[in-house]
Image (tube, rainbow, N blue to C red; front, side, top):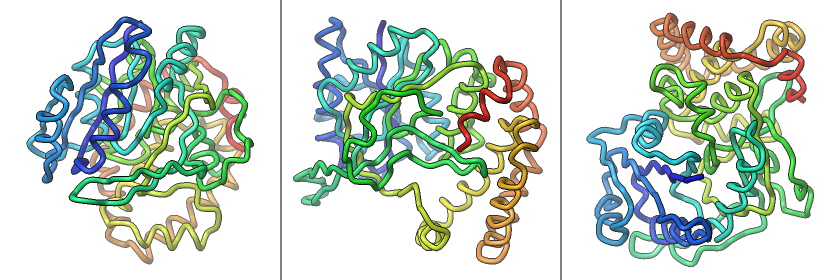
Length: 342
């Protein structure tokens, strides 16, 4: 099976040397007899990202967008342009262990029902020098061990912020894999796409990975977390806030555009993928959680409130069509999905 690596950059120059070196150094390329197939879509970076790739990494395929078209749409561009049977979706702020890709490919080769595989991601710290990040510090603080979700439909990165004490050493099935770094089966993506969109472009950025994981679950596919595959991620947007106060403080520290897409996308996520039987089973938890968000956004982010609901109402026909596709492709019972909501 062949693998294509798809990356979206936006003002990512500082990460490129360590990041692309680790991608090109994957043992999978020599073991499989393949040349590295790496495709970068740049979303109108204002720094020297494009020049750095062209000058220092000439074997990397590059597409430069004139405008920032969003993460979901850019990933779709990369997937449609490449031809690998498997697709490694990556953020440009990662360093991978040399055997990362080999380990995950073996998992997808072994189980045809697997649509996604991911490894154990740790937090990565850097120092900055001359516009580049130098002296990478590979910490033992976990960043993501797969996606997990709760009955109120809150999604987090499993293990995020925890010190690795061996608590996630077992290979196991998970709800889904973080979009920071995941290996996907192309045939599964082809089955669940809407038109020519693999990732839902209504999301622009944030939670598009959760949406993809949920859609794959509805279609009967599974995802696996493999701790032997290790990577280090310089995550700027933290997940897994463990208290309401911490969540509020974190949200108030984020950019306004990020909060708008976060709220809007969460609503679209539920509209598209929630099964009525599961909604009514968990209605108290869902309604309570949504009311808290509703009140908070209405009071502290009133502009986002009206913008989000305005977007949804203006695109309601399109969102309903996407839900219709998800429901027609559904091959699992409600209880098979419900088991993942803790």
